[in-house]
Length: 204
Image 1 (cartoon, rainbow, N blue to C red):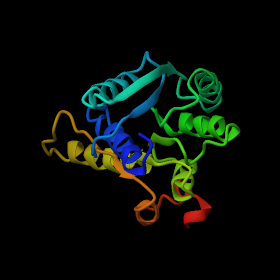
Image 2: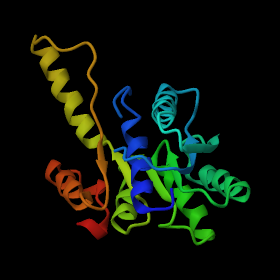
Image 3: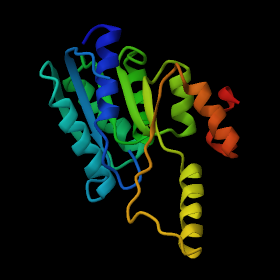
């Protein structure tokens, strides 16, 4: 996966591979080496995100996962984990991080080796730091899930229940794949919801 199109295929496949979430969660082909940074494996979110990634990436025979390690959804731990991974695998093409905090740690490790922008990084959640990194071309994408929008939906559903309306026993709120092409549009969407704190200054 040395080309932009190949990197794009991996990151899009990563994002598409997280369809089953408690409230979460493009392939063109390609080949290369990728790394998975997992969250706290005792949680269903971490388990589901890892399962989705592994199932989807397995459909691409020329993409090889060279390392799978947990960093507990923590930025500092992800920095340490990724630093160690890069020592053994300096020629990776992509990294999938189960959340954006870990993606930020991954970016810090890549920066130390002058690999930012060369290795495609995909995270989850759409935090402000990740949106800024996507806009700057440092991070390829984030599967954005606004806690603000989630809160609004939860209140809406609670109102329906209290009002005697019938609601689905389970409801999945899908994330949105945010890349450099649509990051400004997504930031504007957050602002329209009233979530100004979720938008980095560079996108306000």
